[in-house]
Image 1 (cartoon, one colour):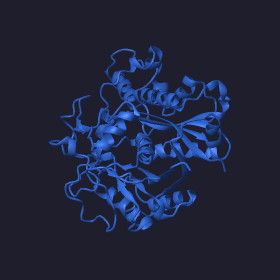
Image 2 (spheres, one colour; image 1 turned 30 degrees about the horizontal axis):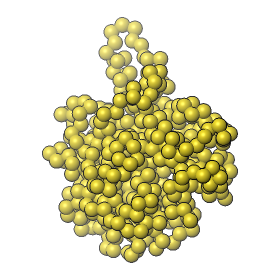
Image 3 (cartoon, one colour; image 1 turned 135 degrees about the horizontal axis):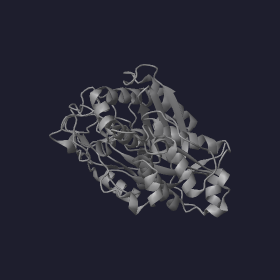
Image 4 (cartoon, helix red, strand yellow; image 1 turned 180 degrees about the horizontal axis):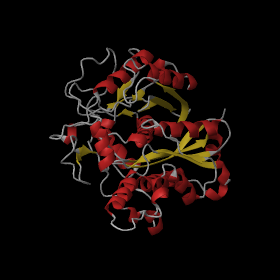
Length: 413
């Protein structure tokens, strides 16, 4: 088995258009949630989101790229470009068939779909669709266009598993490198789901917060008064690389990927198993693969989205795996970023890695009264960052359909 390390990072999300600014705002406990400005939300129960504001695709992409891509792909290209520059690879030194792309998205080109269908319905004579409708819509198009932009001819595809997608992409890249099928991957995920239909659909499920009078505190995992998630958008990119290859070229190494696992709840289309059995199994398997014991883990970034059922189910799962560990500290950074759906795990992987680099556990903000049902002995970090030694970090991501995914990172030794 080959070792796998992270040698490049990139992101664009509501808290920053680069890793440094994003991480600074995460540690500072900044909320990105505000009233939606992109379209009229007055008819929706929920009227808030963590919008990515000020993104100008023309500043980063050429005219043809913009014309042929949905916003989720534009986010992907921007984040991937950052990560490629960060990793410092000279592409002339690597066989392009050894460098792949595994890039996830939960919904793909939702903005394109809505716009094109609306234009079709409004058309009076000979209604036409944009010739780029299907290429812009396809969920795999971000992966394909990243490979085209950089000439990467290795393994290339898109996993889709709702909000577990980002971790699945990272996990697949990890395994292909371990098994000698590639030397490097661009991996991660992107989402641009703040559109009327997507927003309205989640609102109809009563999954989103209706704390419209105070958006900044609407995303509040583990708080007694939490009432649903807040939607976010953006992209997170990681360069995964075979360790010996990275060492030989003198690459900067952020962390090692040491374990990953997937399970299914087989329980409900939207709700997690209340006892967290599937989630607990995913965490246990990831720890075993990482050759770590429960007491070895320093930081756990939970999927916790601020829903009444989901947060407790995941804490119940963590209790099954870790008990009342003295070493482990836990938080949910969706309290700041909102829920980026298929891109959530990608930016949370970056958070887990940066927590190792800087020895800090970022907080869960907006907790005024912790839920009394929180299992005893769990060390949750509320409202202020915790500075401590972090050598190992785990990131969870779960999705509608009962998908559970977990990835473990470790300080390189």
